[in-house]
Length: 265
Image 1 (tube, rainbow, N blue to C red):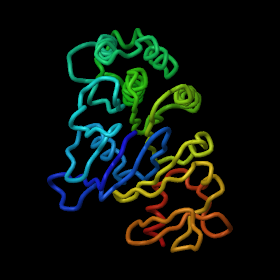
Image 2 (cartoon, helix red, strand yellow; image 1 turned 180 degrees about the vertical axis):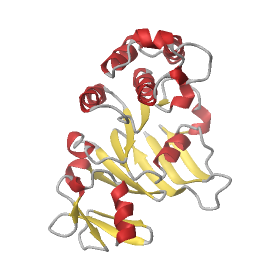
Image 3 (tube, rainbow, N blue to C red; image 1 turned 60 degrees about the vertical axis):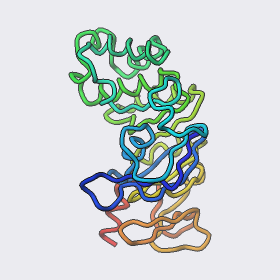
Image 4 (cartoon, rainbow, N blue to C red; image 1 turned 120 degrees about the vertical axis):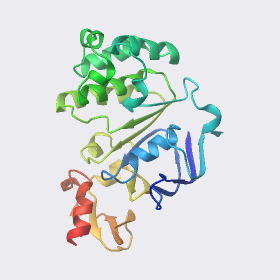
């Protein structure tokens, strides 16, 4: 389980925190939905120990993150910067990480093949020489095949075509452990309807709520009685409701649209 306790994260050049007093527990499969720039990646970087926290605590299975940083089998993340540290070709780099983490090399290669990245290409190129989509597939395959109990996936579907998105989803179904998957796209809600969902807006978390509860939900401006949840964006309150009020969430193909509503409203 990943536990966040009153977590604040800031960057030195900004006075206002990026992550603002977040407390949450994650055990199982979770969607982290929010617009671009809402703090999702910063939150993941903090959990992975890549970005220092300003205050609060991050616990993994009850142990402070600082005490387990770098230990294999506990946490993996699909940020490409982690897997581009040495002047090895991508194949040898992959083998090294699988050896270091006691990961599954065959599984990593299978995931990559399904995502359109074959072993021959990996032998020819350094990790940083892969295309943007190939880099994302590469880092996602490493994270999933590392045998870590907790996996953080930052926008894993970027630049994948629909068929390859479907293939990647199959690997999530087989995973035994904790997954936090962040995205700004809402198409995943009906596909991962059994997952728990939290929203991130302007560095704050709202939820959790089952993805299945959001399939018929609508987004309304203002506070609505009996709302499934409420959140604030740009100083305005929004309510996620069931009924005839507001805009269907299914029409908001990405949560970036919420910012558009905040500005236009």
